[in-house]
Amino acid sequence: MSILLFVLGVLFVAVGIAASIALHEVGHLLPAKLFKVRVTQYMIGFGPTIFSRRKGETEYGLKALPLGGYVSMVGMFPPAKVDDAGIGAGGAVRQSSTGMFQQLTADARQAVAEQLRPGDENRVFYKLPIWKRIVIMLGGPLMNLLIGVIMFAILIMGFGSVQATTTVSEVYKCVVPADQAAETGQTDCSEGDPTAPAFSAGLQPGDRVVSFDGQDVTSWDQMSTWIREAAGREVAISYVRGGETITETITPLLTERPVPDLDGRPKLNADGTPVMESVGFIGVGSQQELVPQPATEVLPAVGENLVRVTGVVLNLPQRVVEVGQAAFSDAPRDPDGPISVVGVGRIAGEVSAMEEIPLESRIATLVGLVGGVNLALFVFNLIPLLPLDGGHVAGALWEGLRRGVAKIFKRPDPGPFDMAKLLPLTYAVAILLMGMGALLIYADIVKPVDLFG
Image (cartoon, rainbow, N blue to C red; front, side, top):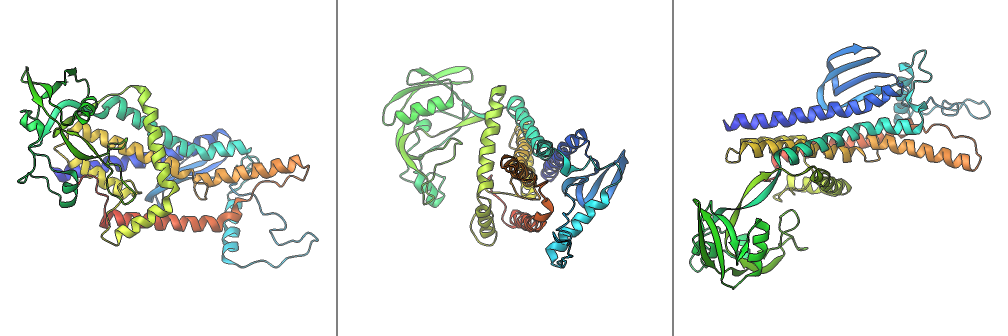
């Protein structure tokens, strides 16, 4: 059963990512057709074509390698200038270059020229106004952003976010010092460990705490704050068990505990050790449940995720190096670092196979994974480097800047910016991206991210 659930989780995310890629390309296709650019192909995947069908002037199809997709539009590059073709300003024929990159550029330009047919003169991409080209290229990333927002809306409003309730999930028998537990991994009680105050007060899993120190308890976080401030002081605690309210006294112990960050994870010092503080502690855990949130919580959650993803992307070279070091050493993977689709699929499978977690929570996690992948695609595709969408946007903006400066200083219009001249850089970036993808896949196989301990 666990294997079947694992496979179902992987398939859920795989289909979600495939649909996201297809819709990303739709985000380019629709505005391109709206602006009358002739679109020759809409393809999902790369390599040999498995299936295709022509509708109108566009061929729609599926290719063998499901590693992305593309929309092919006529006239992506302007024709070579006369000087670029080998004719000097005085009419003299210049010696043609036989360099590899020059040949690649010439071949790409020739391929673009061969796509043209009579009537395409005003339907080529490079002749569009700059704002229209930007709309077309941003259509894909914005589609991923839209999918991400929808997935987070389903997650937050439909399933809800995980919230700590006032119901006790576990009661510790003793208090193990946090530093000792971190160093030795000790979780069981040993001689000399003090009895946990909650255990002494008779609390049991399933009890619902209703008051602490004479104050009504409305949330777990509220009660946690009161406990942390009541170290060494005897206070009353009331809890409901089987419909009966029980009142006992409890004295929180003063103990060293990690300082949590906004995500509930321990804050770390510069040397990687947890930041500690002396607070009251009684030794109980809270029962968690999904609580639907209002629509106003969706965009803030999306924003937090985008900030986190942007931080990873801005430090991507360093993060990839760290992944490589972890993959070829005993160092652990950073759970907040980049992962491949293989890693995402593995996490989805592991979550699905956790039968001890309610089905609703597992489905919510899978929805969140698909949403998170789309937000990551949105940010990643905005990197201003070809062949990414952000590179095309940057080229259009540069053309606008050149033409604007020429107009201000009454100089001749420099014409469209020739993106074909950047093909060597494009190929170099593409090779780096493929290398990064291969490294992440390898790392996700031999040293996967451990999110569940």
